[in-house]
Image (cartoon, helix red, strand yellow):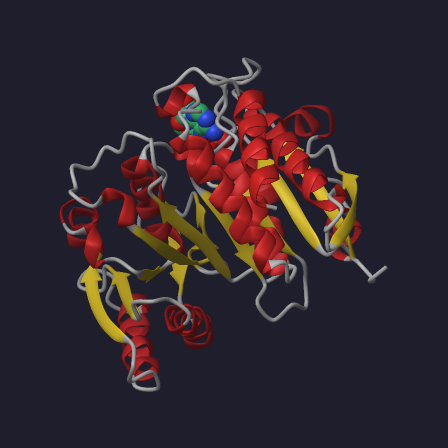
Length: 362
Ligand code: ATP
Ligand code: MG
């Protein structure tokens, strides 16, 4: 028998529908790892961190949390957020802590138009549309630099300062990653998005780095847009999008726009990569904990399952990743659709149908 790869995964289900959709991704991994032709086995360590943990312990994760997960091959993350816990506490206390400490500087967010899913976009060739957003994931507007209560010059009301941080190295590595990604795609094109007319220091540096790096990739077509115009392009000229690279905040906003256009926040997958592979990378659906539908068994698991596919790809199982994405498309095409994409399939049945399709092709 050939030697199978073995993976150790850190699983952080988090809150709300995070807990529900993570189970579905694990079911897909279990299916793949138990087939006769499977190339891998895996084990999981579960970490119960998130807002419930915060309400009991006053922190989002254990003090030695990062050490506990550092030796894993990958992190599979649900979502955090809970009514009563301010979003900036839950986000900084767990997700951003992991992204920044493990130097997961490239956040990959594919936008896919699934067959059978009603898109908000009126486009003649919708099902051919797909692009990937690459989000700088460790600095920019998420630098955490700033403070409140600076009341100099006799100001009587509170003042808050929030600074962005753009380093040449930080810009360069993510821009270069975008070009390398473009080289692997049929259409070789990178679009850079900033608001450098108004953000005249950091984003002008970004533009300069983009211009410099692009010279090294003569075969890759490029263009540069301001984010306001790009928001319109997402709706009006989506066929022009291929690889889109942007700062932390701007790419986050564009990725919700992209997944909503494609049909729902619930179908968007993402990978927080440490491409240098010094630290584990983290895979999570783009959506949050969605407390409005938590516990009802109706959350769409496609974003989480697509994120598991990105994890397989990162772990060297490209073929498996492609097949999972194909099975998702086959399932939606056959009419299995959760409520957010216009059907009444439950979370569990959605995964059942994906597994059914996977068993036909794997
Ligand atoms: P958080 O505070 O954790 O970000 P949120 O309330 O902002 O949570 P999101 O998960 O970001 O909620 O999504 C916004 C809305 O989109 C949800 O309230 C929900 O109605 C819908 N939604 C998001 N993800 C899914 C999903 N996987 N399946 C179905 N609907 C979803
Ligand atoms: Mg949200």
